[in-house]
Image (cartoon, rainbow, N blue to C red; front, side):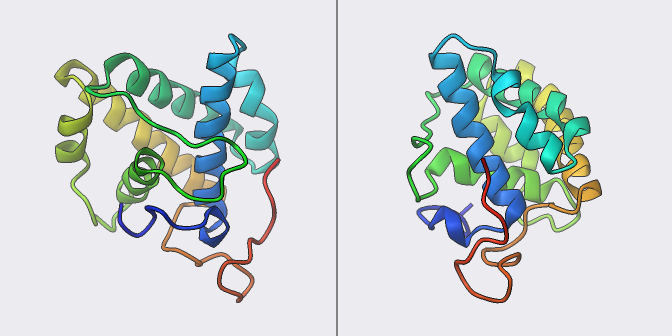
Length: 156
């Protein structure tokens, strides 16, 4: 998580930027009583992530419904990664084999016990979809055209 916290969004690789943008867009859509899937589906499609859309939507719904605290996300235009945005990137990243954080232990601190299993499945499915699309989130600056802080492609 600390690899991402309070960092400029532009320093994230494409997968990290997609996750930040998607979480913020999901929150904005829900607050405006709009369908979150409609708000993010086109970006997922552009990133060859349509097969990961349901897992992302399920993850966000579970965090929203079963969170032990109110998750805080920045506005779309903010260029810094919030604590909960950093946690989501770290959880998806840890769903691969790098094991930098214990996913189950982290989820135990964030959500009610009844949601942990479903969240693990959703996060793992999202991570697999991101890996298949070639945008699995990595360390800061890993996908920046060789220039630290320069994003490869902007998100919508």
